[in-house]
Length: 494
Image (cartoon, rainbow, N blue to C red; front, side):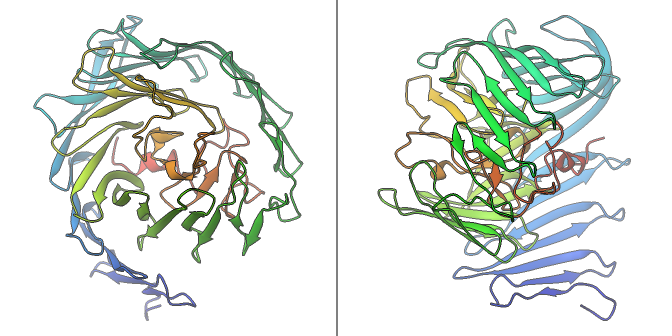
Protein backbone atom coordinates (compact mmCIF):
# COMPACT_ATOMS: atom_id res chain seq x y z
CA UNK A 1 0.00 0.00 0.00
CA UNK A 2 1.07 3.59 -0.62
CA UNK A 3 0.90 6.34 1.99
CA UNK A 4 -2.58 7.24 0.69
CA UNK A 5 -3.76 3.60 0.88
CA UNK A 6 -3.54 2.86 -2.83
CA UNK A 7 -2.77 -0.74 -3.66
CA UNK A 8 0.53 -0.72 -5.54
CA UNK A 9 1.76 -4.29 -5.43
CA UNK A 10 0.47 -7.83 -5.01
CA UNK A 11 3.24 -10.21 -4.01
CA UNK A 12 2.66 -13.94 -3.75
CA UNK A 13 4.57 -16.23 -1.35
CA UNK A 14 6.42 -17.97 -4.18
CA UNK A 15 7.03 -14.69 -6.05
CA UNK A 16 5.37 -15.99 -9.22
CA UNK A 17 2.72 -13.85 -10.87
CA UNK A 18 3.44 -10.77 -8.77
CA UNK A 19 1.47 -7.68 -9.86
CA UNK A 20 2.55 -4.02 -9.93
CA UNK A 21 -0.04 -1.22 -10.11
CA UNK A 22 0.76 2.34 -11.28
CA UNK A 23 -1.60 5.33 -11.14
CA UNK A 24 -1.88 8.62 -13.00
CA UNK A 25 -2.23 12.04 -11.38
CA UNK A 26 -5.97 11.53 -10.92
CA UNK A 27 -5.59 8.21 -9.05
CA UNK A 28 -6.75 6.21 -12.05
CA UNK A 29 -4.98 2.96 -12.82
CA UNK A 30 -2.49 3.74 -15.57
CA UNK A 31 -0.44 0.57 -15.83
CA UNK A 32 -0.64 -3.01 -14.58
CA UNK A 33 2.32 -5.39 -14.78
CA UNK A 34 2.38 -9.10 -14.04
CA UNK A 35 5.32 -11.46 -14.20
CA UNK A 36 4.83 -14.65 -16.20
CA UNK A 37 7.22 -17.50 -15.31
CA UNK A 38 9.56 -18.44 -18.18
CA UNK A 39 8.01 -15.85 -20.52
CA UNK A 40 8.58 -12.40 -19.03
CA UNK A 41 5.82 -9.96 -18.14
CA UNK A 42 2.35 -8.94 -19.31
CA UNK A 43 1.67 -5.20 -19.21
CA UNK A 44 -1.71 -3.48 -19.62
CA UNK A 45 -1.75 0.32 -19.98
CA UNK A 46 -4.83 2.60 -19.85
CA UNK A 47 -5.64 6.11 -21.06
CA UNK A 48 -8.75 8.13 -20.16
CA UNK A 49 -10.69 11.18 -21.29
CA UNK A 50 -11.85 14.02 -19.03
CA UNK A 51 -14.98 12.04 -18.13
CA UNK A 52 -12.87 9.09 -16.92
CA UNK A 53 -13.99 6.96 -19.87
CA UNK A 54 -11.27 4.64 -21.15
CA UNK A 55 -9.92 5.80 -24.51
CA UNK A 56 -7.26 3.14 -25.00
CA UNK A 57 -6.09 -0.17 -23.59
CA UNK A 58 -2.57 -1.08 -24.70
CA UNK A 59 -1.55 -4.67 -24.01
CA UNK A 60 2.04 -5.85 -24.16
CA UNK A 61 2.43 -9.62 -24.27
CA UNK A 62 5.86 -11.28 -24.04
CA UNK A 63 7.84 -11.53 -27.25
CA UNK A 64 5.42 -9.73 -29.58
CA UNK A 65 4.59 -6.14 -30.51
CA UNK A 66 2.03 -4.29 -28.35
CA UNK A 67 -1.63 -4.39 -29.40
CA UNK A 68 -4.09 -1.59 -28.72
CA UNK A 69 -7.86 -1.27 -28.40
CA UNK A 70 -9.07 2.34 -28.56
CA UNK A 71 -12.46 4.01 -28.02
CA UNK A 72 -14.28 7.23 -28.86
CA UNK A 73 -17.61 8.39 -27.42
CA UNK A 74 -20.61 10.54 -28.19
CA UNK A 75 -21.28 13.53 -25.87
CA UNK A 76 -23.71 11.45 -23.78
CA UNK A 77 -21.01 8.83 -23.13
CA UNK A 78 -22.34 6.22 -25.55
CA UNK A 79 -19.71 4.44 -27.58
CA UNK A 80 -19.01 5.97 -31.00
CA UNK A 81 -16.18 3.71 -32.15
CA UNK A 82 -13.87 0.91 -31.14
CA UNK A 83 -10.63 0.15 -32.95
CA UNK A 84 -9.16 -3.31 -32.44
CA UNK A 85 -5.53 -3.38 -33.57
CA UNK A 86 -6.35 -1.15 -36.53
CA UNK A 87 -9.80 -2.57 -37.38
CA UNK A 88 -12.45 0.11 -36.79
CA UNK A 89 -16.04 -0.51 -35.68
CA UNK A 90 -18.42 2.46 -35.48
CA UNK A 91 -21.72 2.65 -33.60
CA UNK A 92 -24.97 4.44 -34.42
CA UNK A 93 -28.10 4.84 -32.28
CA UNK A 94 -31.58 5.83 -33.45
CA UNK A 95 -35.21 5.50 -32.33
CA UNK A 96 -37.17 4.12 -35.26
CA UNK A 97 -40.27 2.23 -36.29
CA UNK A 98 -39.96 -1.02 -38.15
CA UNK A 99 -41.58 -4.28 -39.15
CA UNK A 100 -40.34 -7.75 -38.31
CA UNK A 101 -39.64 -9.66 -41.47
CA UNK A 102 -40.81 -13.17 -40.50
CA UNK A 103 -44.00 -12.24 -38.65
CA UNK A 104 -44.68 -8.83 -40.20
CA UNK A 105 -45.39 -7.36 -36.76
CA UNK A 106 -44.73 -3.59 -36.49
CA UNK A 107 -42.94 -2.09 -33.49
CA UNK A 108 -40.98 0.99 -32.49
CA UNK A 109 -37.85 1.36 -30.43
CA UNK A 110 -34.08 1.74 -30.31
CA UNK A 111 -31.88 0.57 -33.17
CA UNK A 112 -28.17 0.03 -32.52
CA UNK A 113 -26.07 -0.30 -35.65
CA UNK A 114 -22.48 -1.53 -35.69
CA UNK A 115 -20.60 -0.75 -38.90
CA UNK A 116 -18.09 -3.54 -39.39
CA UNK A 117 -14.45 -3.33 -40.52
CA UNK A 118 -15.22 -5.28 -43.69
CA UNK A 119 -16.52 -4.39 -47.16
CA UNK A 120 -18.18 -0.95 -47.20
CA UNK A 121 -21.83 -1.07 -46.19
CA UNK A 122 -21.76 -4.33 -44.26
CA UNK A 123 -23.10 -3.93 -40.74
CA UNK A 124 -24.99 -5.62 -37.96
CA UNK A 125 -28.09 -4.19 -36.32
CA UNK A 126 -30.03 -4.80 -33.12
CA UNK A 127 -33.61 -3.52 -32.80
CA UNK A 128 -35.43 -3.14 -29.47
CA UNK A 129 -39.05 -2.42 -28.66
CA UNK A 130 -40.32 0.18 -26.19
CA UNK A 131 -39.99 -2.31 -23.36
CA UNK A 132 -36.28 -2.56 -24.08
CA UNK A 133 -36.61 -6.15 -25.32
CA UNK A 134 -34.51 -7.29 -28.26
CA UNK A 135 -36.80 -7.94 -31.24
CA UNK A 136 -34.47 -8.34 -34.20
CA UNK A 137 -30.79 -8.81 -35.06
CA UNK A 138 -29.33 -8.99 -38.53
CA UNK A 139 -26.03 -8.91 -40.35
CA UNK A 140 -26.04 -7.60 -43.91
CA UNK A 141 -26.33 -10.61 -46.26
CA UNK A 142 -25.87 -12.85 -43.24
CA UNK A 143 -28.04 -14.18 -40.41
CA UNK A 144 -31.39 -12.66 -39.37
CA UNK A 145 -32.78 -13.33 -35.86
CA UNK A 146 -36.28 -12.46 -34.68
CA UNK A 147 -37.49 -12.56 -31.06
CA UNK A 148 -41.01 -12.69 -29.57
CA UNK A 149 -42.05 -12.47 -25.90
CA UNK A 150 -45.07 -12.98 -23.70
CA UNK A 151 -46.57 -10.39 -21.38
CA UNK A 152 -44.03 -11.26 -18.69
CA UNK A 153 -41.14 -10.48 -21.03
CA UNK A 154 -40.15 -14.15 -21.39
CA UNK A 155 -39.00 -15.36 -24.80
CA UNK A 156 -41.62 -17.37 -26.69
CA UNK A 157 -40.17 -17.56 -30.21
CA UNK A 158 -36.70 -17.25 -31.73
CA UNK A 159 -36.16 -17.46 -35.47
CA UNK A 160 -32.70 -17.85 -37.07
CA UNK A 161 -33.08 -17.15 -40.80
CA UNK A 162 -31.13 -16.12 -43.88
CA UNK A 163 -31.06 -12.30 -43.92
CA UNK A 164 -31.24 -12.09 -47.71
CA UNK A 165 -34.26 -14.43 -48.03
CA UNK A 166 -35.93 -14.86 -44.64
CA UNK A 167 -37.95 -17.87 -45.79
CA UNK A 168 -34.63 -19.76 -45.77
CA UNK A 169 -34.56 -21.31 -42.32
CA UNK A 170 -31.54 -22.15 -40.19
CA UNK A 171 -33.09 -22.86 -36.78
CA UNK A 172 -36.47 -21.92 -35.29
CA UNK A 173 -37.33 -22.24 -31.59
CA UNK A 174 -41.04 -21.69 -30.98
CA UNK A 175 -43.81 -22.23 -28.44
CA UNK A 176 -41.55 -21.70 -25.42
CA UNK A 177 -43.69 -22.25 -22.31
CA UNK A 178 -42.92 -21.49 -18.66
CA UNK A 179 -44.25 -22.26 -15.21
CA UNK A 180 -45.26 -19.60 -12.69
CA UNK A 181 -41.66 -19.32 -11.44
CA UNK A 182 -40.33 -18.62 -14.95
CA UNK A 183 -38.79 -22.05 -15.49
CA UNK A 184 -38.83 -23.14 -19.14
CA UNK A 185 -41.04 -26.23 -19.54
CA UNK A 186 -40.89 -26.90 -23.28
CA UNK A 187 -39.93 -25.54 -26.68
CA UNK A 188 -40.46 -26.70 -30.25
CA UNK A 189 -37.37 -27.01 -32.46
CA UNK A 190 -37.27 -26.92 -36.25
CA UNK A 191 -33.82 -27.31 -37.83
CA UNK A 192 -33.57 -28.64 -41.39
CA UNK A 193 -30.84 -31.00 -42.57
CA UNK A 194 -27.78 -29.42 -44.16
CA UNK A 195 -25.79 -32.00 -46.08
CA UNK A 196 -24.64 -34.66 -43.64
CA UNK A 197 -25.77 -32.56 -40.67
CA UNK A 198 -29.11 -34.09 -39.68
CA UNK A 199 -32.44 -32.37 -39.19
CA UNK A 200 -33.58 -31.79 -35.60
CA UNK A 201 -37.35 -31.49 -35.37
CA UNK A 202 -39.48 -31.98 -32.29
CA UNK A 203 -40.14 -30.77 -28.77
CA UNK A 204 -37.65 -30.40 -25.93
CA UNK A 205 -39.19 -30.75 -22.47
CA UNK A 206 -37.79 -29.79 -19.07
CA UNK A 207 -38.73 -30.46 -15.46
CA UNK A 208 -37.61 -29.12 -12.07
CA UNK A 209 -37.67 -30.10 -8.43
CA UNK A 210 -39.27 -28.13 -5.60
CA UNK A 211 -36.18 -25.88 -5.41
CA UNK A 212 -36.47 -25.02 -9.14
CA UNK A 213 -33.37 -27.06 -9.98
CA UNK A 214 -33.51 -28.70 -13.39
CA UNK A 215 -33.88 -32.46 -13.02
CA UNK A 216 -35.01 -33.56 -16.49
CA UNK A 217 -34.54 -32.76 -20.17
CA UNK A 218 -35.54 -34.81 -23.18
CA UNK A 219 -35.94 -34.57 -26.95
CA UNK A 220 -36.59 -37.11 -29.67
CA UNK A 221 -32.94 -37.00 -30.80
CA UNK A 222 -31.60 -37.83 -27.34
CA UNK A 223 -30.60 -41.46 -26.88
CA UNK A 224 -32.03 -41.24 -23.36
CA UNK A 225 -33.45 -38.49 -21.14
CA UNK A 226 -31.02 -36.13 -19.43
CA UNK A 227 -31.65 -36.49 -15.71
CA UNK A 228 -30.16 -34.86 -12.63
CA UNK A 229 -30.63 -35.11 -8.88
CA UNK A 230 -29.19 -33.06 -6.03
CA UNK A 231 -28.50 -33.24 -2.32
CA UNK A 232 -29.78 -30.53 0.06
CA UNK A 233 -26.67 -28.40 -0.53
CA UNK A 234 -27.06 -28.35 -4.34
CA UNK A 235 -24.41 -30.97 -5.06
CA UNK A 236 -25.38 -33.03 -8.12
CA UNK A 237 -25.75 -36.63 -6.99
CA UNK A 238 -26.56 -38.01 -10.45
CA UNK A 239 -25.60 -36.31 -13.72
CA UNK A 240 -26.77 -37.93 -16.97
CA UNK A 241 -26.80 -41.35 -15.34
CA UNK A 242 -23.47 -41.06 -13.48
CA UNK A 243 -23.51 -40.99 -9.66
CA UNK A 244 -21.40 -38.59 -7.62
CA UNK A 245 -20.80 -38.48 -3.89
CA UNK A 246 -19.83 -35.32 -2.01
CA UNK A 247 -17.92 -34.67 1.19
CA UNK A 248 -18.65 -32.03 3.83
CA UNK A 249 -16.76 -29.44 1.75
CA UNK A 250 -19.06 -30.03 -1.25
CA UNK A 251 -16.24 -31.71 -3.18
CA UNK A 252 -16.66 -34.83 -5.32
CA UNK A 253 -15.79 -37.84 -3.16
CA UNK A 254 -15.73 -40.54 -5.85
CA UNK A 255 -12.59 -42.63 -6.20
CA UNK A 256 -9.91 -40.91 -8.26
CA UNK A 257 -11.11 -37.35 -7.62
CA UNK A 258 -8.55 -35.32 -5.64
CA UNK A 259 -8.71 -31.77 -4.26
CA UNK A 260 -5.91 -29.58 -2.97
CA UNK A 261 -6.39 -26.16 -1.36
CA UNK A 262 -10.01 -26.30 -2.49
CA UNK A 263 -9.15 -26.90 -6.16
CA UNK A 264 -9.85 -30.06 -8.14
CA UNK A 265 -6.40 -31.35 -9.15
CA UNK A 266 -7.20 -34.90 -10.28
CA UNK A 267 -10.39 -35.87 -12.10
CA UNK A 268 -11.89 -38.90 -13.80
CA UNK A 269 -13.53 -37.97 -17.11
CA UNK A 270 -14.78 -40.74 -19.37
CA UNK A 271 -12.15 -43.15 -18.11
CA UNK A 272 -9.31 -40.63 -18.31
CA UNK A 273 -7.44 -39.03 -15.42
CA UNK A 274 -6.52 -35.42 -16.27
CA UNK A 275 -4.38 -33.45 -13.81
CA UNK A 276 -5.21 -29.78 -13.18
CA UNK A 277 -3.01 -27.04 -11.69
CA UNK A 278 -4.03 -23.62 -10.35
CA UNK A 279 -2.44 -20.37 -9.25
CA UNK A 280 -2.94 -18.65 -5.91
CA UNK A 281 -6.17 -17.06 -7.18
CA UNK A 282 -7.66 -20.50 -7.97
CA UNK A 283 -7.39 -19.87 -11.70
CA UNK A 284 -6.67 -22.86 -13.93
CA UNK A 285 -3.07 -22.66 -15.21
CA UNK A 286 -2.53 -26.18 -16.55
CA UNK A 287 -4.58 -29.09 -17.87
CA UNK A 288 -2.59 -32.26 -18.48
CA UNK A 289 -4.08 -35.50 -19.80
CA UNK A 290 -1.49 -38.29 -19.65
CA UNK A 291 -3.98 -40.79 -21.10
CA UNK A 292 -4.11 -39.11 -24.49
CA UNK A 293 -1.82 -40.30 -27.26
CA UNK A 294 0.29 -38.20 -27.28
CA UNK A 295 -0.40 -36.60 -23.89
CA UNK A 296 -2.29 -33.29 -24.03
CA UNK A 297 -0.74 -30.37 -22.17
CA UNK A 298 -2.53 -26.99 -22.05
CA UNK A 299 -1.10 -23.92 -20.33
CA UNK A 300 -3.08 -20.83 -19.31
CA UNK A 301 -1.60 -17.37 -18.67
CA UNK A 302 -3.28 -14.47 -16.87
CA UNK A 303 -3.02 -10.73 -17.25
CA UNK A 304 -2.52 -8.43 -14.28
CA UNK A 305 -6.21 -7.46 -14.44
CA UNK A 306 -7.08 -11.13 -13.81
CA UNK A 307 -8.31 -11.94 -17.32
CA UNK A 308 -7.13 -14.96 -19.25
CA UNK A 309 -4.26 -13.58 -21.31
CA UNK A 310 -3.46 -16.57 -23.45
CA UNK A 311 -3.27 -20.31 -23.91
CA UNK A 312 -0.82 -22.80 -25.30
CA UNK A 313 -2.36 -26.05 -26.53
CA UNK A 314 -1.76 -28.62 -29.26
CA UNK A 315 -0.84 -26.58 -32.37
CA UNK A 316 -2.26 -23.50 -30.65
CA UNK A 317 -0.57 -20.48 -29.09
CA UNK A 318 -2.79 -17.42 -28.76
CA UNK A 319 -2.99 -14.24 -26.74
CA UNK A 320 -6.35 -12.51 -26.28
CA UNK A 321 -7.51 -8.91 -26.48
CA UNK A 322 -10.56 -7.74 -24.54
CA UNK A 323 -13.34 -5.20 -24.58
CA UNK A 324 -13.88 -4.90 -20.85
CA UNK A 325 -14.27 -8.54 -19.74
CA UNK A 326 -15.21 -9.90 -23.18
CA UNK A 327 -12.67 -11.52 -25.56
CA UNK A 328 -12.65 -9.73 -28.93
CA UNK A 329 -9.47 -10.88 -30.70
CA UNK A 330 -6.94 -13.69 -30.91
CA UNK A 331 -3.29 -12.81 -31.47
CA UNK A 332 -0.80 -15.39 -32.76
CA UNK A 333 1.67 -15.97 -29.95
CA UNK A 334 4.55 -16.59 -32.33
CA UNK A 335 4.09 -13.83 -34.92
CA UNK A 336 2.10 -11.22 -33.00
CA UNK A 337 -0.46 -10.97 -35.82
CA UNK A 338 -4.18 -10.64 -35.11
CA UNK A 339 -5.74 -13.80 -36.58
CA UNK A 340 -9.38 -13.52 -35.49
CA UNK A 341 -11.77 -10.73 -34.51
CA UNK A 342 -14.89 -11.62 -32.51
CA UNK A 343 -17.78 -9.23 -33.15
CA UNK A 344 -20.56 -8.56 -30.65
CA UNK A 345 -23.83 -6.71 -30.65
CA UNK A 346 -25.39 -5.39 -27.44
CA UNK A 347 -26.69 -8.88 -26.63
CA UNK A 348 -23.54 -10.84 -27.40
CA UNK A 349 -21.42 -12.59 -30.02
CA UNK A 350 -22.62 -12.66 -33.62
CA UNK A 351 -19.62 -13.58 -35.81
CA UNK A 352 -15.90 -13.79 -36.25
CA UNK A 353 -13.51 -13.05 -39.10
CA UNK A 354 -9.88 -12.29 -39.85
CA UNK A 355 -8.79 -8.65 -40.17
CA UNK A 356 -10.21 -7.32 -43.43
CA UNK A 357 -13.15 -9.72 -43.36
CA UNK A 358 -11.59 -12.93 -44.67
CA UNK A 359 -12.53 -16.38 -43.34
CA UNK A 360 -15.77 -15.02 -41.93
CA UNK A 361 -18.16 -17.16 -39.90
CA UNK A 362 -21.55 -16.14 -38.57
CA UNK A 363 -23.42 -18.04 -35.88
CA UNK A 364 -26.96 -19.09 -35.13
CA UNK A 365 -27.94 -19.59 -31.50
CA UNK A 366 -30.50 -21.39 -29.40
CA UNK A 367 -32.43 -19.43 -26.73
CA UNK A 368 -29.68 -20.07 -24.16
CA UNK A 369 -26.77 -18.62 -26.15
CA UNK A 370 -25.29 -21.89 -27.41
CA UNK A 371 -24.00 -22.01 -31.00
CA UNK A 372 -26.23 -24.11 -33.29
CA UNK A 373 -24.70 -23.39 -36.72
CA UNK A 374 -21.46 -22.07 -38.07
CA UNK A 375 -22.43 -20.24 -41.25
CA UNK A 376 -19.93 -19.44 -44.00
CA UNK A 377 -20.34 -15.83 -45.09
CA UNK A 378 -20.17 -14.98 -48.78
CA UNK A 379 -21.84 -18.15 -50.03
CA UNK A 380 -25.49 -18.49 -50.95
CA UNK A 381 -27.92 -20.40 -48.74
CA UNK A 382 -27.54 -23.18 -47.66
CA UNK A 383 -24.10 -22.11 -46.48
CA UNK A 384 -23.95 -24.07 -43.24
CA UNK A 385 -20.58 -25.43 -42.11
CA UNK A 386 -21.83 -27.40 -39.12
CA UNK A 387 -24.65 -28.23 -36.72
CA UNK A 388 -24.21 -28.41 -32.95
CA UNK A 389 -26.54 -29.21 -30.08
CA UNK A 390 -25.87 -28.70 -26.37
CA UNK A 391 -28.13 -29.70 -23.54
CA UNK A 392 -29.19 -27.07 -21.03
CA UNK A 393 -26.31 -27.77 -18.66
CA UNK A 394 -23.48 -27.88 -21.17
CA UNK A 395 -23.01 -31.37 -22.60
CA UNK A 396 -22.34 -31.42 -26.35
CA UNK A 397 -24.51 -34.05 -28.03
CA UNK A 398 -23.73 -33.13 -31.59
CA UNK A 399 -21.10 -31.10 -33.44
CA UNK A 400 -21.00 -32.39 -37.01
CA UNK A 401 -19.94 -30.70 -40.23
CA UNK A 402 -22.23 -30.55 -43.25
CA UNK A 403 -19.68 -32.73 -45.06
CA UNK A 404 -19.93 -35.47 -42.42
CA UNK A 405 -16.81 -34.79 -40.33
CA UNK A 406 -17.69 -35.71 -36.76
CA UNK A 407 -16.81 -33.85 -34.63
CA UNK A 408 -16.43 -30.61 -36.58
CA UNK A 409 -12.69 -30.50 -37.35
CA UNK A 410 -11.93 -26.76 -37.02
CA UNK A 411 -13.79 -25.26 -34.05
CA UNK A 412 -13.02 -21.84 -32.65
CA UNK A 413 -12.47 -21.18 -28.97
CA UNK A 414 -15.70 -19.13 -28.92
CA UNK A 415 -18.27 -21.24 -30.77
CA UNK A 416 -19.76 -23.68 -28.29
CA UNK A 417 -21.75 -23.69 -25.07
CA UNK A 418 -22.73 -20.15 -23.97
CA UNK A 419 -20.48 -18.72 -26.69
CA UNK A 420 -22.98 -15.88 -27.12
CA UNK A 421 -21.67 -14.49 -23.82
CA UNK A 422 -17.95 -14.86 -24.47
CA UNK A 423 -17.42 -18.20 -22.71
CA UNK A 424 -14.33 -20.04 -23.95
CA UNK A 425 -14.46 -23.67 -24.94
CA UNK A 426 -11.48 -25.95 -24.40
CA UNK A 427 -11.76 -28.34 -27.35
CA UNK A 428 -8.58 -30.13 -26.28
CA UNK A 429 -10.09 -31.16 -22.93
CA UNK A 430 -12.72 -33.44 -24.40
CA UNK A 431 -11.67 -37.11 -24.37
CA UNK A 432 -8.76 -37.45 -26.73
CA UNK A 433 -10.39 -40.32 -28.67
CA UNK A 434 -13.46 -38.05 -29.14
CA UNK A 435 -15.88 -40.76 -28.06
CA UNK A 436 -17.70 -38.04 -26.15
CA UNK A 437 -17.61 -34.42 -27.25
CA UNK A 438 -17.95 -32.67 -23.89
CA UNK A 439 -14.92 -30.69 -22.73
CA UNK A 440 -14.37 -28.03 -20.09
CA UNK A 441 -15.64 -24.47 -20.37
CA UNK A 442 -13.36 -21.63 -19.25
CA UNK A 443 -14.36 -18.07 -18.46
CA UNK A 444 -12.21 -15.06 -19.11
CA UNK A 445 -11.44 -15.07 -15.36
CA UNK A 446 -9.95 -18.55 -15.47
CA UNK A 447 -12.89 -20.27 -13.82
CA UNK A 448 -13.37 -23.76 -15.28
CA UNK A 449 -16.75 -25.51 -15.44
CA UNK A 450 -17.19 -29.20 -16.19
CA UNK A 451 -20.53 -30.05 -17.85
CA UNK A 452 -19.91 -33.72 -17.11
CA UNK A 453 -20.23 -33.06 -13.36
CA UNK A 454 -22.28 -29.85 -13.32
CA UNK A 455 -19.67 -28.16 -11.13
CA UNK A 456 -16.84 -25.66 -11.11
CA UNK A 457 -13.41 -27.18 -10.66
CA UNK A 458 -12.52 -24.60 -8.00
CA UNK A 459 -14.36 -22.68 -5.28
CA UNK A 460 -15.91 -19.97 -7.38
CA UNK A 461 -19.66 -20.56 -7.28
CA UNK A 462 -22.07 -17.86 -6.13
CA UNK A 463 -24.46 -19.91 -4.01
CA UNK A 464 -23.96 -21.44 -0.59
CA UNK A 465 -22.18 -24.22 -2.46
CA UNK A 466 -18.85 -22.87 -3.79
CA UNK A 467 -18.67 -25.45 -6.59
CA UNK A 468 -22.29 -25.33 -7.78
CA UNK A 469 -23.06 -23.97 -11.23
CA UNK A 470 -26.25 -23.76 -13.30
CA UNK A 471 -28.35 -25.86 -10.97
CA UNK A 472 -31.09 -23.26 -11.41
CA UNK A 473 -30.70 -22.27 -15.06
CA UNK A 474 -33.18 -19.38 -15.17
CA UNK A 475 -32.23 -17.86 -11.83
CA UNK A 476 -28.49 -18.45 -11.72
CA UNK A 477 -27.74 -17.59 -15.33
CA UNK A 478 -25.33 -14.80 -14.38
CA UNK A 479 -23.28 -14.97 -11.22
CA UNK A 480 -20.48 -12.91 -9.77
CA UNK A 481 -17.78 -14.98 -11.44
CA UNK A 482 -19.19 -15.54 -14.92
CA UNK A 483 -20.66 -12.04 -15.36
CA UNK A 484 -22.70 -13.20 -18.34
CA UNK A 485 -25.16 -10.32 -18.03
CA UNK A 486 -23.16 -7.77 -16.06
CA UNK A 487 -20.47 -7.78 -18.75
CA UNK A 488 -22.73 -6.10 -21.27
CA UNK A 489 -23.45 -3.16 -18.94
CA UNK A 490 -19.79 -2.22 -19.29
CA UNK A 491 -19.78 -1.95 -23.06
CA UNK A 492 -20.97 1.65 -23.34
CA UNK A 493 -24.29 0.90 -25.02
CA UNK A 494 -27.27 3.05 -24.01
